[in-house]
Length: 416
Image 1 (spheres, rainbow, N blue to C red):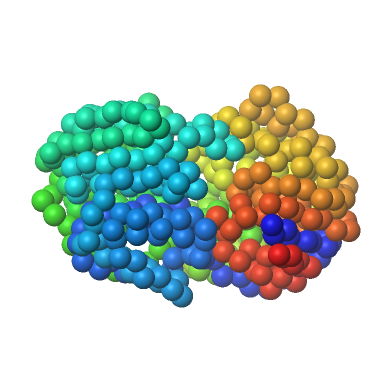
Image 2 (cartoon, rainbow, N blue to C red):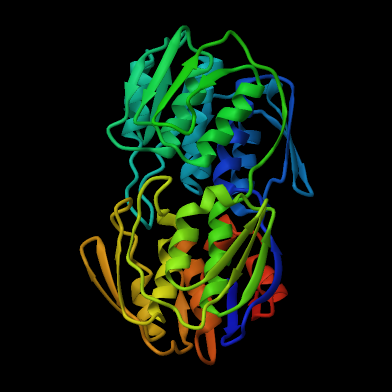
């Protein structure tokens, strides 16, 4: 099993290019199920979750051709409506085949994804919304079965903001009979990116990026060529790393409008940030100031940046309070940060972080994707050597992270 070894204490300097967004790529790749013809996607990141998605699509009878950041998908041969457990268990986002399959084939049988390290994340909101569109839903032997001769438009209110739920139902509704309105919909850039691609395929979606999305059903869609938007969480991770190490890093191929909350908090923490077009330059301040954060749905501070920002606060001056409102179990990285010398106390969904003068390198173990990134960041600033084990989590959502940090001057390497 791979591990990453880091000799901390180096100031990051240079330029880094952000890869395509995993969380945008996954639903967009799934949307290819809605039509025949060859869909071509560029700027697709090289990640384990992308590989899992392509394996699942191939299992459904879809022709896939991938290489050098470009993926071509021809769903003309779609011949299965079942997503089996062995594939779905590898990645929760596999549930995104549910809406497209019901819309295109009139039926879908998808394994329940189960829980994950950062919380239960049930799909009941997806199922309730599909039922509102007229699908018959049954649960048996760990599988969800949904069927409908043709879905029918409806007004749907999500009890909680759900990104994958919004995406799944948006894909289901584009081929429904009539108009669907999603209330309390997710506003994330990834939702907007999916809506943009669907509209280019011939869908009629308005309001994406707001809590109210309207989808007017059409009779059919056509194939498209599309670029995947830059990854805002990778952008935020490199911004935080620059501030953490007192570095000077220019981040290219990013969307500054997608990371506004992170920019604001880093400036409050003392970093100097300059934005020019699709480039962000971060200069670390003379000292790191304590800042309170509260994770919220977009455009609030993202839950996927909470762990990385906690590392920054671990070496800040003063005391910060970090409140996690999205997932119920997203402080599991705290115990590993304590092994490095961080002073963090957790009570419920709140962590109180007292900044220390320095962290000290030690062996640590990653528990999920963003926790992995947080431990790598901690290793960059810790004295001596940090070994991050179980880094396969990193490969699910960061493309060549250790190589990119090495390009900025970090003493970091992967041991296979």
